[in-house]
Image 1: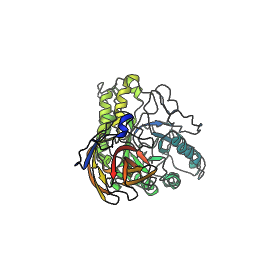
Image 2: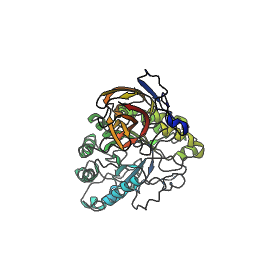
Image 3: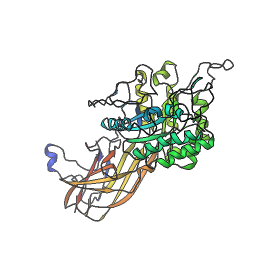
Image 4: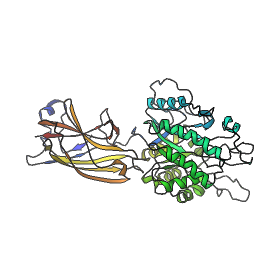
Length: 481
C-alpha cells in the first residue's frame, strides 16, 4: 500500500473521517509514497518473447526449435495465457520464409500475417516479425524461373548454409527488385499496425541474418527499401552486417538485434587452438560488432533484442556461465530476450525471471507531492520522483497523465514529461497543470498513469502495488474549492 500523508477511507469508523483529517489546519501540501511492486508486470514492448507461437501454446520439445515454420494455422484461443517452464510475456516473435509468404510472384499470403496479429492480440501480445530470404534451398521457385543468378556453390557458414545449397546472388538486380517488392508490399499493408511490434531488416543471407554476399553498395540499396517503406513501425538491424552499419549512420530510430546471444563454446573446434580459447560470439563478435556498427549508444533511442544461441537448456547442458551471460545482456541495455520458446531449466528460473524484470524499462513511482486543494481552472504544481530501474527507456510515444474522478465524471490531464526520455536512473519531474474546469466543489480522486495518447487508455504500469483494473494507479485525493 502507498505510504501517504493522508488518511484513506476504509471500512467501519474510518468512513466518518475526512480524508485529510490527519493534516493540520495550516498544511497546504501532501506527499504520497507508493510501495514498490517487485513482481512481474505485464507491460508492453519489453521482456521475453515466445517464438513461432503465442502465450499459452506448448513449448518446443527438449532443446529444439524451428526457424523454418512460422505460424500458419491459428486455433481458437482457450483463455490460457500461462507458459509452464517459461517466463510470462507480452511479446511474440515470428518469422517466415519468403517462399511461404509469396509462393507466386505478387500473390502474398497476408492471411498468415493477419492471423498472427489477431492471435497475438487475443493472447495479450504484440509481434516482432521477419521475412527470411531463404534457409538452405528455400528460395521461391518462381524467382529462379525468372533467370535469377545463384552464388557459386560453396560451403557457407551460418544457419541454413552449407555446401550444395542454391543461394541467390544478392548483387543481381533481380534480387533487389523482387525481394524489395515483398518488403514494400508488407510495409504498405502493415506499417504502423498496432499489433506489429517491430520488423527485422533481414536483407540477405541464410535466415536473413548475415547479409549474404551483398556488397556494401547492395546492402545500402536493400536497407533503403526498408527505411523508405517503414515510416511508423520500428525497424531492427542485424548486428554485424554492413546494413546495420549503414542504418546506424542514416537514423537513430533503428534498433538492433543479435542472433547468437549466450554463445560460449568452450570445446576445441580447431586442432591448433587450446580448449576454452576458440572463437565464440560473446567474446569475439559482439564487443567489436557493436563498436564497428556504430550502435554502442543506440539503446538510448531504439531497442535492442537478443536471441539465444541454441537454447537456455543447451547453455546449462554445456556448463556455460549463466550469470556472466545475463550480465552481458544487461550491459547492452537489452529490451527484448528471445529464448526460442524452449524450456527454462528449473534451477535457472529465478535468475531468468530477475533478468526479465530488468529488461527494457521498469518505472517505480517513488513519491508524488501536490497540494491538498485546488480551484477549477487554476494552476496546480506537482513534483514526481520516478526511478527507471530497468536498463533502457520506453521507446513508444505514451503520455504521463493524471486522471481526476468525481462519481461518474472524470477528466484527464497530460503532463509534459516524455517517458521516451526516461533513461535508467532518477527522473525528477516538476510541472504545473490546470485543474480541470469540469471538477465541482468537493473531493476528487486522483489517479496516475502512462497512457496511449490517442485512446487515452492506460497502457504501461508503474512498478507500484496499487492499481486499478483499467491499469491506472490510485494516487490520492484533493479538495476542489
